[in-house]
Image 1 (cartoon, rainbow, N blue to C red):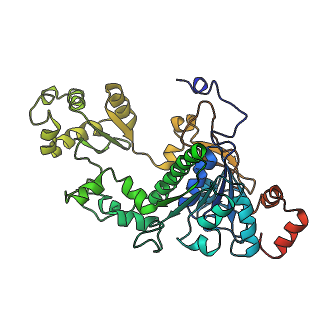
Image 2: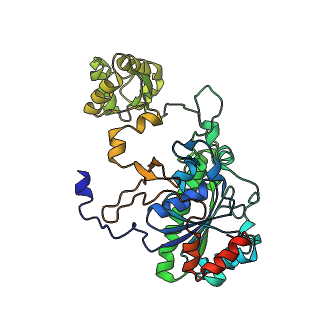
Image 3: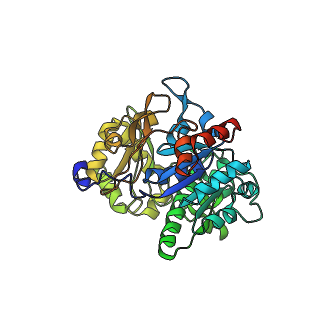
Length: 409
């Protein structure tokens, strides 16, 4: 399918499938901002509320090249498509403004430590007094309840506590955390999914609700069933780049780089054996089934290794693809950023940053043929929409000036 065919009935008058939905984003770092980012990318009007000093994402290195002051790559990535309001939530005036905004919102997303929002007078119970059908998403390390709910919790701790780190890394090496904020990302996605499910329920019944998402729960849910194996005492190996159910699958060295390739089905093995000039191995009982290949894993890997070592990455990928064998170049992010397929899929979009420079920012994942999504604007400067948002709730210029003088906004 051509891209133009996919988008042939696209509407240009909507921000996305969530056009008209309003979200208050009271978050910091990554998990909460990611949840709100997904909703913003889907077209919701997301108001990011920050303390007048700004949140930690604005100060995380590295900064994107361009004009000064520099813009953090974290802030530019996760806070795009949002409006920005500075507000001192710990003050009575700030709380009152928040409640006025909450009364007009559909969804609130927050990821402070459990109890913090209640202490500030803007927790779920307080908000539902002014907006009974509010959808209130709380993201935290360990959840809103449970024996350890009030512990500080960040992404690496969730990775560790879930069991993920114990299995990550080479088979004979130490445990290794994920190179990305995996727990934060998954919690953010589940927060967005939960918000959308609750939104559907509200539209059907008029009922709002509190949505509780824990980083630990998100890591456990995405553990591919390993938590069940652990509960039953079934041993789980660290496999590195291999799998127990797909032999051989590994990373192999080509003449000019590395690929990951493998055979998931017995039929794939037969195809590859012929490709490798060893048709005799296609039906050999030592290799014909997954169970037998598992018993002869080293020999399988050796055959693959020899075949790939004689080819360039391009040749190997092309031959495997033509034969229906899964194979991919092991690339750096720099390589991926230059890939024509990545660019055609608009996974990098040129965006004007708050300092006026332009940078390629990672685009939305889901593509919608009728209500296309895109990066509509870059992550805003601190307080860039303060006057605009306050005016929407009836705060005039003189009142805003007084709030600035008192450092409320």
